[in-house]
Amino acid sequence: MNIGIDARLLNTSIRGTHRYLSNVIKYIPQFDNENKYFIFHYADTIQKNEFYSYITIRKSRLPRQLFEHYWLNFILPNLLSKYKIDLFFTPYVFVPFVKNKWKNVIAIHDALTKTCKEYYTWHYRKYMDLLVPQSVKRSDAIITVSESARQDIIKHYDVLPDKIHPLYLWTAENYKPINVTESEKKELFNKYKLPEKFILFVGVLEERKNITGILKISDILYSKGTDIKIVLVGREGFGFSKVAEKIRRSSNQIIHLKSVDEKDLVSIYNLATIFLFPTIYEGFGLPPLEAMKCGLPVVASYSSSLPEVVGDGGLLGDPNDYELFANSIVKLLGDEKFYSLMKIKALEQAKNFTAANHITKLIQIFNSLK
Image (tube, rainbow, N blue to C red):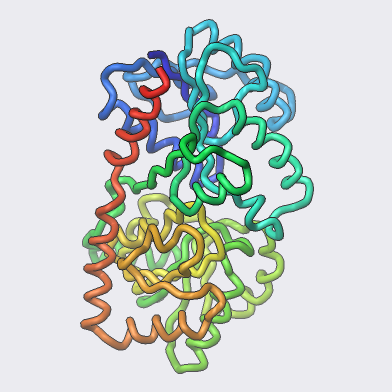
């Protein structure tokens, strides 16, 4: 079977989608020696593997978003026919309006514009409301990343349950406990102005991530006499302007790093004391898994998919119960035996999420559509 993969998003700054696509492309060759794969990509994509046949997308003078839709609906169908593609897989929902002989498999990571409308502009919600249902109808199978997301997609997009498959995500192998040498530690502390001891958050700094809650938790900790800074790693997102001034004024409690090198991020996970993730909604929640893979105790909300991901590997609570989060942090900081136990539990829970689980099931879904 000839399988085409939409890899345009290898060039995107959307961390979660980029990482998912990159990992799928990386691991498929290890688990499939029967099907032939074609990668549709832009010329400046760095990732290359002889296992794949690459089909380069020519650049256009059209605005990027306009060209993306033009390419998808007018150029891609001809390419799919030309290369006799039997199945087209996209990690970002959208498929061509025209439906020919090929099968469509799409990935929908969440139903955020339905479940968390208040965090998106009216125009973006209408854009998604127009296009997502059409892609859902034209798809032969849908991949999502948690049972929680699956239920939301079934509810909001009227999907038959048998059509949608929850396949958990995983992290790259470099997310693991490592020994950061004193010289490396000194270099990182100087580069990012990190304190010796800190609580870590990784993710887009947007309203859905409950950044306001993190600031309140920090204030509660400060009022309890717990002197530990919170390091926020992530770009500014929707609603950041509401907390920007508070973050600026709380420099004695909060450090904001807009971007961190991938290699450095693994080291920062290993240097952190606790990982804090009181987010409102997650289709999966990759940062807590990255933290657990590094043996970092996790304090997170029990909303949406996070109980599936964190499980017994962390301490869960209501995303609006800031006192509970602060108390959990205080307990971890003050009880060495409990802290060590949570490190062990984090590592054990993280073992449930592997590339083999995801990729083998993904290939099975592809093959079921022959």
